[in-house]
Structures are given as C-alpha cells and as structure tokens.
Length: 200
Image (tube, rainbow, N blue to C red; front, side, top):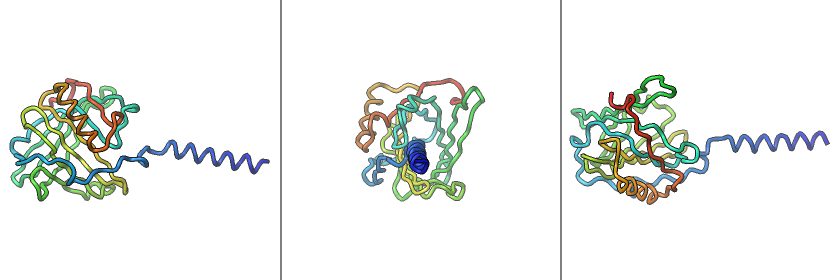
C-alpha cells in the first residue's frame, strides 16, 4: 500500500513537472526563410533609424499569459559595411529605468536578410536569422526573426511603426501575415504605448 501511494506521488510529481515546464515543447514549426516574403529591392539606408514595436507574433508568444506588452523602440544604425548596430530600448519593470539591448545584424547573401553578429556572445544560440518581409520605410515594417536555441527553433514577427500608433488596417495585415505562417490569435499581441524610455 505504501509503495503504491509512493508510486502515485511520483507519477503526480512527474505530471506537475511536465506541466510546469516551458510550453516550448509544442512549438509551431518555424517556416523556411524561402517561404517568408522578402522586401523587394531592400534599401538599407531608408530602413535605418528608430522604429516602435507595435506588435509581436511568434511561436513562443502567448496572449493568454502576456495579454499585451509595454511598447519599446529599436534603432537601426547603418554601418559602412552595411551591417546594422541595433539597439532596443525597453522599460524596466516597476519604474527601474530603461534597459538597453544592443546587437549587430550582419547582411546575408540576399538584401534584407541578416544574421546575428558576434554569435560567440550567445553560446546557447545555434543560429539567428532576420528578414525584412515588407516595409514602406516611412510608416511600417514587418520583420521576421528565427533562432535556434538549445535545439529548439523559435520564430517571431515584429510589427514596427515609425510612430507609436498604426492604423487598424496595418494591424489586421500583420495579423493575417502571422496567421499565414501558421500562428494563431493566441500567438499575436499588441503593445501599450508609453513615453517612458523609448524616445531616448
């Protein structure tokens, strides 16, 4: 009897541990870069500058858990070698100031495609690709990101705006694009605008 109770306890512990594990075991498969649109005749000089993150969609995004997020901005600084120094400026939790996340995007063989520079700084990341899917340079951009980390493949699409507000039509277009890559409504969230940090 004591042995069966102990076995039941261990079984329940196993169930709880598997439920508590990251939900990444059931990730929606990441699409091939060849199936993701690529902005024709990408112009790196026009893409540079500040973008506000208006929407996010991805196979690790869960609307039920996150609901929305505080808007942040990302600045693309074009370098002489056509790579970008990319700085994201985020609001820290509980008014603890601003957080800066800096990385380098190195151009790939096709204009509008990039890989993460200085990969040795991120030992858990096996690959990281960035692809500008569509942009008009002046108002919006949709950028596809795919990374392999600890043998799991994650992907996300970011809806950028040159301003903090985008039209409902652009948000709907972003939602349709995300769903065309296999994502569901629960994988798509939009930001809450803020004036804190993101204009620094």
